[in-house]
Image (cartoon, rainbow, N blue to C red; front, side, top):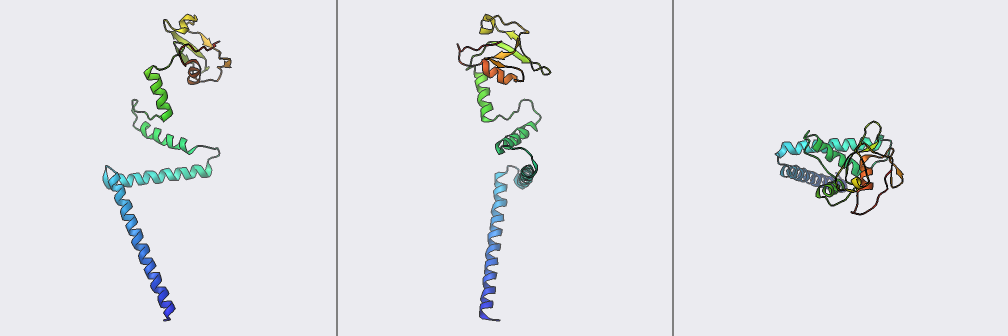
Amino acid sequence: MKKSTKYTMIGIIIFLAFVLIFETTYLFLVVNSYSLSSSRGKEGAARKAVILENIDSLENMIDQFYLFDYEKEDLETGVYKGLIAGLDDPYSVYYTPEEYNKLMEMTTGEYSGIGALLSQDKETGLITVVKPYKGTPSEEAGLLPGDVFTKVDGQDTAGMDLATFVNFVKGESGTEVVLE
């Protein structure tokens, strides 16, 4: 065997040995990090790996076949919401930061509105007054149960969802809103 061929073979063997050592070390560290990060040990880590693989496969299929534009953040939010929804517990809900801030605003009472309980008919989409509260702008304006809103600040309410309507009528105390 020629010296150059001999050195080439030795170089290839050394290279393969380094690759094998690197891969073995990498796999050992990855498997151990999964085990340490999982409260359920190796079974939990294996399950998480399968879940992540499935999510990755779904994301690849969406990228390949989905016809419309989408935001990756919306997919992530959907995963989080779906995980909590899988509990089938009406008291467990995942909120995005924006949804959480709105919830806190509503529950801490740090906003003003027209002072009425409203509803939206599922079939017609009409937004109606269910009950005007005493001592509020809705009572002062003479709103009655059953009154229907057709416009808010000049915008047609047809096709508007209740949450959007509420955003128009809530704000700082004393702010005016025109309702028809």
